Amino acid sequence: MFAPIFQASAAKHGEQVLHIKLDTEANPGIGQEFSIRSIPTLSGFKNGLELKRISGALPPAQLEQFVRDLAN
Image (cartoon, rainbow, N blue to C red; front, side):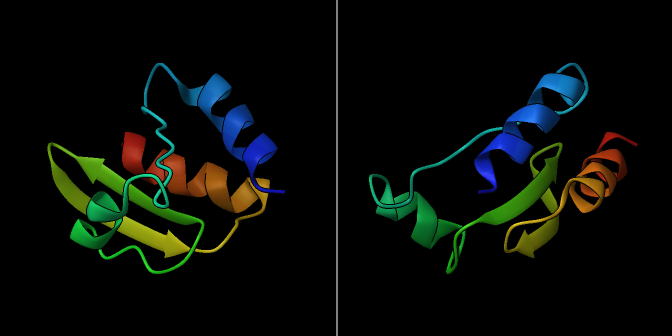
């Protein structure tokens, strides 16, 4: 249900914010390293530092705000 919203955001903001999907079942070590406990988990990084994290699917307007906060 969240995948189309995420893809639309990636298409809209791809020039400013890199959107990456990680399959934590196929890559459990990375999931553990970043303490991902629920799917989806959105983490926002800037210059290698995690700035924001939200667990759970977001409606488009909330995802838009999440991305805008990172782009600034």
